[in-house]
Amino acid sequence: MKIIVWVACLLSSAAAYPLVQSRQTEDHAWRAPTATDRRAPCPMLNTLANHGYLPRDGSDISMDVLVAGLKAGVNLGADATKLVGAAALKGSTTGNASTFHLTDLNKHGLIEHDGSLSRADTSSSDNHSFNATIWAQTASHFTESTIGLGTAAKARKDRLTAAKAENPTFNMTDGDVQASLIETALYLNVMSNETGVTAVTAWVQKLFQQERLPIEEGWKRPKGEISVATILGLKVLMSSRQVRTSNI
Image (tube, rainbow, N blue to C red; front, top):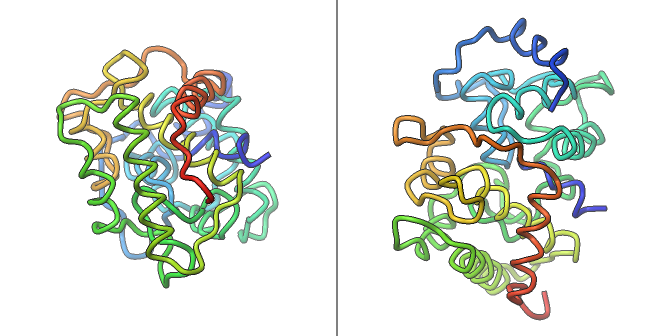
């Protein structure tokens, strides 16, 4: 179940898209969040909020708005988005069971897990903000202009190994391990140079470090819709390379 749930971190019918337009207008320029804006442990969702594809304040997000925003922003399919939306709604603190705040996703076990590529573990005082030290561990593997499947898999595996060594209470369920594979597959797809398996390093850096779509650096919204099948296909390829850290 957890595998399916995370397929989102990162669609809607045409009827859903106007919900985003009416609430946010067509302004998708990047703007840094204010001190009162809510953000999640997911750089993809935060990025889309920073660009106005999701509510910029990160509050009261419905399934329709989530689906339309991810479709419009990064061409993520409805099948993927609705799954993360279902998980988010389970942790809703809005007082409305059909909406959630991005901060609701900070709850451990929804989409947040130990061994993140860019966040501290749940045992820390902050499991949701970008952590430059942790990201440096991950990004140290990205020494070329592009990130291939093997490099991304190695970065993920070494990050899990480091997290386990540093955190005496480190814990990842099998679902968490699979989710971390899916997270890597997602950024490879969204930040791909149209190959679907090779991401541009500079674009990935902007996504994680600045939570910004690297439009100025040449990134364009993927032409093909990124579906559950697409993401799971890459996840299977990484699994076949035995990237899971033993005994996690």
